[in-house]
Length: 227
Image 1 (spheres, rainbow, N blue to C red):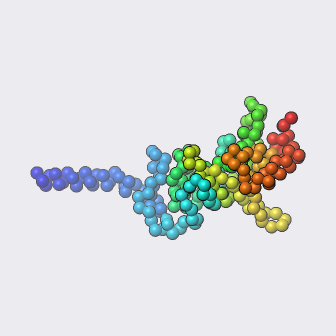
Image 2: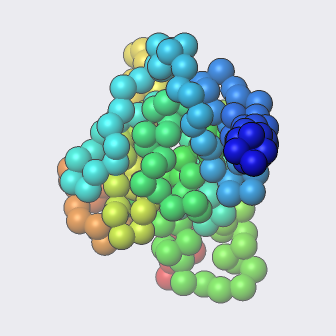
Image 3: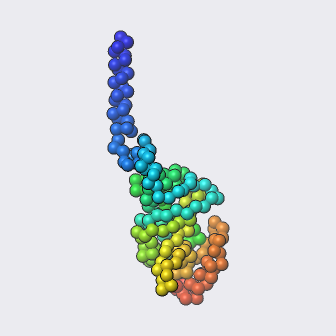
């Protein structure tokens, strides 16, 4: 009787091993993407995965901004957000661990960043076809500036919404050499959005105010349609 029970116990354990996570095909970081839950699961974190991490990050914490690099893969539908791809799995998982499912893409290591101080759709009051054209126009402008390009994002964690808010920076070439462009500020200067301070003023408050005045004077973007 004892032998039979022992055999059954071994059989159950063996079956669990065969059907459990260990039976999944693991990637080089020691985990796998679960299609059912749409989350990445570690099984055995490899030393190779840890060593190859290209950037040091810390878990998103309210009131503690940090800078992260990434490649822009998508412009949000309302042009108030972008998606960036993080190169390595380990820093991605640290950054994504506190985010809601709608603000992370574990399969492709992508994070959604809500742009601070701007809201192209929130800047226009006209309805109907104009709003669709406006979204198409602002999406085109942001796509030209950001799509498939490496950016540096200063992120801040919003705990209630479980999302990342951020200011995006790119490097552009000019006659005087390379310089950094604040994309959020650039959007205001191009008339793609008003300067919004719903989450507090920007550290570059004066620059944003001046950019909005210049856009209004030049009738750039949305200012062309204001009466």
